[in-house]
Length: 553
Ligand code: ACM
Image (tube, rainbow, N blue to C red; front, side, top):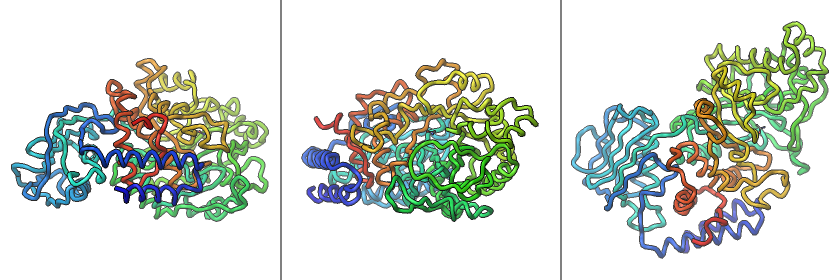
């Protein structure tokens, strides 16, 4: 047991010592050590009621099932050669030491994977553990995948000792609340290697998230190779320093590497949504191609956080050609039907002064700059339509109206009436990412981010209490297709910090995304946290132990 404690301590101190105030390190170490020691002294007790996100229905019964070599492994033909079966074999081997080979022949006891097309939601599943073994039912590989994630959480942790293969009798019927359950990473601020993003994907998948939004471009860096515009990465991916550190920072993803990430995430049923932020947040473009600005000059990538007034010039035809070319390459990398076009924080000052923009407004009878915004996105959307894609936007009130196939993200702290009216009257879709619940770049405790004291606190409890339909009528709620939380990257220089900011808040958020409202309860979530935090540790994920809730255990 001591070995485990030492491993934890050494992991934490090696990876995080330089980044987190010492007091926090100390708290984390003591907390984890006490949990591990507490566990080592306790009788192994495996419960079926600490799954996160909370399943739709859990019926526990008395008794345990333990897999042995004589058991069979029957797999329906629909799932026979799937990755899910390989995953399940690996999990069973890891947890029980037993290697089962899939077969199409029935066995009296063991593991059974059935195809059941009466399970209407493709992400839904049934998982039953009884005297006869482990039985999954699903109508799609996605459902089977999520059933396996649940099984992973039902197994005891390795630190719980020899008996780690025993599973509690239970019947779980599960189905998600929302079809769109996203997290966002922001490698535009600090480049995150592809291998690190794969690790992030692995952990998201454990908690049934199914979209990873990548904020690939911003004033601080352009991160995606575009063959037709090589200067985007030659010039636009490197800033000379960050917040006065004097060290250049850069990096970009080749198209090949991004395709690899897309394939990796796909195996875990996660779609990658790329964001090409426009017409603001584009200084990395203007540094490389200044002629795309309304007022060309020498641009330098931003080195500090903040919103710039520099915009791509919607009055210039070259700008539309630029996006036509860029998006033609982007759509070949990301096969899914949505693409994020940004749209946030684009002040209109320059467009007001630009003769190009004023001529565009006049010639097309757009009225004013807000009309030009709508026109700009309408034309960019025409490019997406050619590729059968739909746009997602950060909702802003300075866009007169959005294209009819749009999804709008509610990300500020209020519910703008204009947005709700537009969604309702034009049938747009909405992603709820309310600023007070979904910004995982905000500190979890006072002192977490001494350099960004303007940021509000976002505690685990705040995140848990996120209710995606709060303040909305039933009709308005019907337009919500999902929820998303963000790890903006200004203060997130590497994967460890991204994990630290994400977990355990993403566990709370996963219940807002997946669990039926009637099944959500802060107290029951808290009772599941101990096991979940040990599971995260077992998977090498560094998180912030929420000591304020749990240190009395
Ligand atoms: C945003 O936080 N700029 C969408």
